Amino acid sequence: MTMLGDRQQLAYIASQAADARVNVELETEGMTLNIGPQHPATHGTLRIIARLDGEQVVWAEPSAGYMHRGYEKLTEVRTFPQVTALVNRIDWLGSFANEVPFILAAEKLMGVEAPSRAQHIRTILFELSRIANVSLFLGDLGVQLGAITPVFFAFRDREYVLNLIEGATGGRFHPNFDRIGGLKDDLPAGFIDETRVVMKKLRTFCDQIEDLLFGNEIFQSRTRGIGVIPKDVALSYGLSGANLRASGVDWDLRRDQDIPMAWNKTDFKVITHPDGDSFARCWVRLQEVRESTKIVDQLLDTIPAGPVMAKVPKIIKVPEGEAWVSTENPLGEMGYYVVSQGDQGPFRVKIRSASFNNISIVPWLLKGVYVPDIITILASLYFILGDIDR
Amino acid sequence: MGLVDRGRLPKPLTSLFNMGRSYSLWVYQWGLACCAIEMGAAFGSPRYDVMRLGVIPLPASPRQADLVVISGTVTDKMAPAIKRLYEQMPEPKYVISMGSCANCGGPYWDSYSVTKGVDQIIPVDVYVPGCPPRPEALLEGIVLLQQRIKNEDMGARWRGEGTKSMNIVDGESAEKGGVPVVVHN
Image 1 (tube, chains in turn yellow, brown):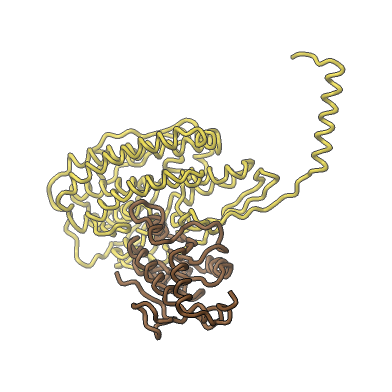
Image 2 (image 1 turned 180 degrees about the vertical axis):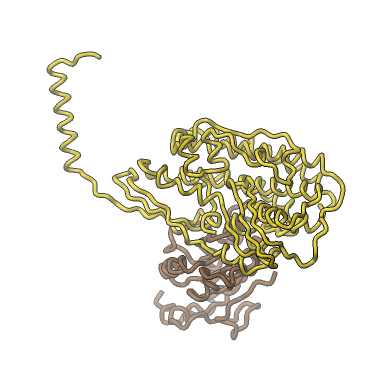
């Protein structure tokens, strides 16, 4: 360390004193910033109350419940097939993925297993809804950071995937296609060839977004090193999905658990990133779209022949018991704990949705960040309001 | 616009103004749930492209907007905020209720926390049914609203007599003036 001369020391002390004086004179009052509940760029309504000191957040808390629709209570007055139509709308971007764990739980209770063709098609549709979900995230990410172009790309290429889902299920948005014991229908003619073409388009879309957005200097400087979630914190807050993998945890329910779906017949990489910052979370999601397109391609090659529906009675009565099934949904781990008492409808359903746990880290994460970074961090955490409030 | 205030604007001039108004709607998007994605597809995607109808999405504030699209489930917790922002919009203002949830509660018709229809809080001009409606349905709703605006007696609205039809353009009769329109899809 170099020693300062007397004069330099005096100057230093004087400057410190001047700073202190300025700080006393310009002392800022705390301010409460209310973000939401309504914002034109969002779909859904999250309110975040942040107390600021100047530009920095001192305290922040999400106020959920503006989208609470009472799913868990409604499931008690619906029959099992009716619940499928309801849970479609929890995570509205990846609708088909919401049906699967519930149906699997009901099948587990009944002791039915879907035919392997149905399992394959379920997995294909599951991955398609993941692609539809995350590709919109990639476009929306640009909008949140002030770039309008990516959203046009995202909506353009998402339409192709939605057309596929509509062609197969009849529902563009909410398929309601899963049945206890299989699927409502087989795939339509020409679905496989069309899907291959679309998957190629989606890979091009990923390249474009990577060049356009992730290679952008502004994007990188706004996301790199911002909103860092260390591994242990991510685990202790119960994060799941890409948010957890971006913190370096190698965790993927598609690979790790043995459920009657076709993922174990495919070969895919689980993408992780060591950094845990906003950039890592976005990057992991982008790579996951790529992996999903590869999974779909592999599954298209190996669809077995056979029926798509197992033998189940027309009026479904689920025997007494309790079952828990969770899957790796686009947003993270989504699970249903179904309690049945032998009736046509469930006695109680506990829904574990990914976004609710992902958003629980917000008060910890927003402490000390600057106001513009709030938006970046929230965008990169990627929640869907129906998934938070249910 | 003193003539308009007193409701004494000649009909040809009114229809000229109405044409201008109907093709320069600023839409305030109220994206609440699933429908917001389809609204986003209608407003922000190259395939549907609402701007060719003369509708401009994303105003900076509801105070600049002419039209609000309520898309999605209105919950009891959200309802006061909707009413408040609706009241901040300047007259003349229009409301499109998009999707079953905003129309009547939709799949949550027996839920304890959902408002069964946004028309319980604010007046609705056009209902777009569907769960969620396709973007094309929303576009049709906007076209129907534009027809209504072209037909409107501006003076009556300024005098506080509500929406009255002038019956200049075909499509809507004078008696149907204040009755909401439903998109048939």
